[in-house]
Amino acid sequence: MITRRLAQFIVGKLTRILAITLGIVFAFASPSWASPLSSYQMPQTIAQAPAIQRTRSFVAIAVERVGLAVVRIDTERTISRGPDPYMNDPFFRRFFGDGIFPPGGEERLQGQGSGFIVDSNGTILTNAHVVSDADRVTVILKDGRRLDGEVLGVDEVTDLAVVKIPVQSSLPTAALGDSDDVQVGDWAIAMGNPLGLDNTVTLGIVSTLNRSSALVGIPDKRLDFIQTDAAINPGNSGGPLLNADGEVIGINTAIRANATGIGFAIPINTAKQIMPILARGEDVPHPYLGVQIADLTPDLARQNNRDPNATVMLPEVNGAIVLGVVPDSPAAQAGIRRGDVITQIEGQAITSADQLQGLVDHSQVGQPLQVNVQRGERSQSLTIRTAPLRERRQR
View 1: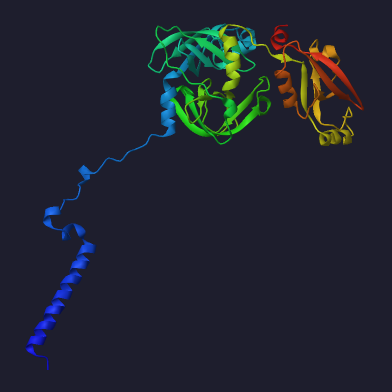
View 2: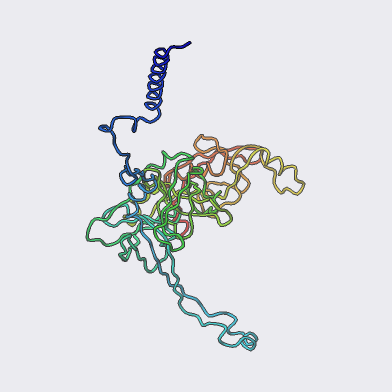
């Protein structure tokens, strides 16, 4: 039998063990209220919690850097319109009456685009098609001021123009980047006034580089565009395309009417070369040969040669085939003929029409170029001296 004293001893031990055990549990499970009252602290309320730090996006920072330098450009142009030829036809006048045919006169056309300030004295860069032939140019600044703009120079070949506005104090300017450093996949931020919606910003990426104007669908230009999927709409023309650092890498210029998510911008390095010339009111020299050309490969030549209806047999070589020659042009004077295939210029092999055009564009006006031509089974070397493109247009 367990004696009374032994029973009291066992109960005391069990009580001590239970207290120690519960103390351990409390220490691990609830340290705040298990601690002495002297060290107890009320938990922070929601109002006392530290505020969440929100970081601004790189887009917002880039727009803040450039936004004040982006402008809207409104234009007015007056055109003369002759009377409707049907107005003098008694038959149409009998059935439709006199009021259906408005008399001739002047008509005022309005346009709208974008631009950005590149010099604190009020020099603005934009597209040529925004201000060409405008009778009046009005520049609207971000702060709402409306100023008359003077078109200092226009170059339709590269679709660039420089406008000047009168200022009494320094204006904010856009920082110009280096378009040669741009890579496919880089961020692209388009700014401007699309569809008259001022101060609009869209975001995308650089889709591709060096997209030729011929592939874009504007063969009368001489440009290699930056292609982007940042939304570009009518009214964006002339506005800046920015990189992630808020530097201008291009000038929003063109869209494809039959596609979405495809826009094009003139590389800013191209504008850097031409802008000083236009600001001085001078013409930009563009050398030309005077040929209409297309790509030729051996496969294309063989397809042509197998056609029983082919009017000419083509040499099965790589090069640029001459589809036409402008009369009295440098090419015509040098003896280039329709059907010739240009295979080399200055010792460099020609594999496409775009490559040939690029080599001519990078030459100097009046520079003699050594051109190798394949004519049927014969090859010959000709010297063509380039001429200024503008002179050809003025003839």
